[in-house]
Image (tube, rainbow, N blue to C red; front, top):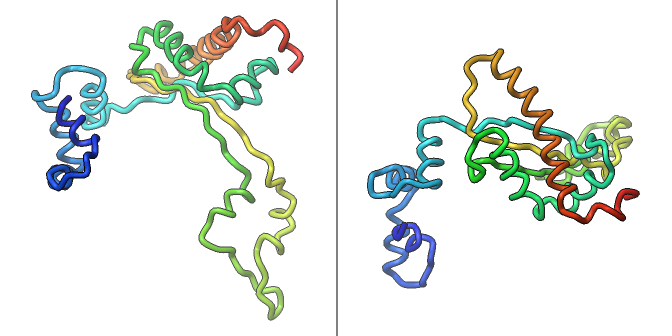
Length: 197
């Protein structure tokens, strides 16, 4: 798509800036979904977005809940090394184009850590003296700020017939995908000496 290459290849010229300013989200979506754009993944994804045919979450698991320590460790520390193989295995298993399967690992930090990113502390009155909420709340002080949870989720362009179909298929996907993830990591050929991790 020449127009996208030109749009995202800054050359410092006044012509580039003039062209850049013509584009906004609506123009971008309309152009990509038009006949001017050849069929492909980019067009397919934008057409899905425009039609609100969004990807569905078909798997979610706390990384700490995987049974084997080596699997937990590798997902946590080396996820990007396995991502494409995981997406490919899932796509082939559930008959979805692997390029349309998205595996994502993310971290949820403790409430104390998240609160540090806010604009400022909440002040509470203790008698006539204002004090910081974090110091006054016994519950809040008890939260370990180093605690964090890591999750692995998978998204795909799945369409469910109804709620019953959704519940059945999500249960099936959950079991299948967990096994596929473990198989991909096991098949890396490096498992041997790391079982005790």
